[in-house]
Length: 301
Image (tube, rainbow, N blue to C red; front, side, top):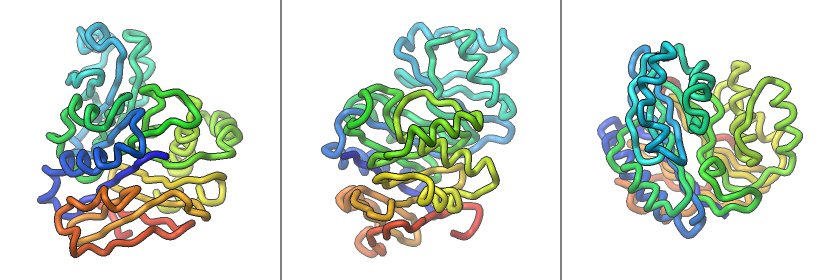
């Protein structure tokens, strides 16, 4: 049992409130998963620049002098530290090199996510503590997703927390379990994908990344997941401009959605949505089994 939330803003005037709104939604879901928590925020992209969120168990050591160490390797970057995480600002054409560069100067650092606009923060512990330590409430953006975890199939670690990100500006949160993740993982490794954990949810994220790399949009990739992924799942997925939801054909994991002229919201339970502005007049529904829902700022859903 895990708790997942998502918020896709249509009304730009709400963007400064995104961090606060998502934080409250996630904290409400604490009793669905007190082991670890995480949140992804999609903010404003800067032309020619990308963000890389990294994590370290020894931030005082690993983040000290990191900008200078990367500069010595030829990478122009700035480093903004937030507790055990830091966000690197790098040239957009260098995201493919960043893991190798980090391994050469700080081998114990792990990449949480990268892309033009996404920042991902996740740690073990309660959602209220994760939200507080990373100052999520102060963050603005266009959309975001969050997860609070009750571990069932893998260890309680930072890397095992959600969201999982396996491609630039792509991430996924998952409630459920997959039965064929080992087979899918082997297929994706043959395609060149790499994995940080043995978590089945990371396989789901990598599957979607692989499908979108082949030219599919988020909706098409989620449709393919219904055929190719076995098990129980509710996925909420973010891309640079999009937000998608899908449940397996049995749909035994709880889910509720709400839509107004200002936003689309997802929660594992309705109580995650009750404090959103205008929720009393929202269209509220339970997403249908084996049905893909997605919205995109760059095109019609």
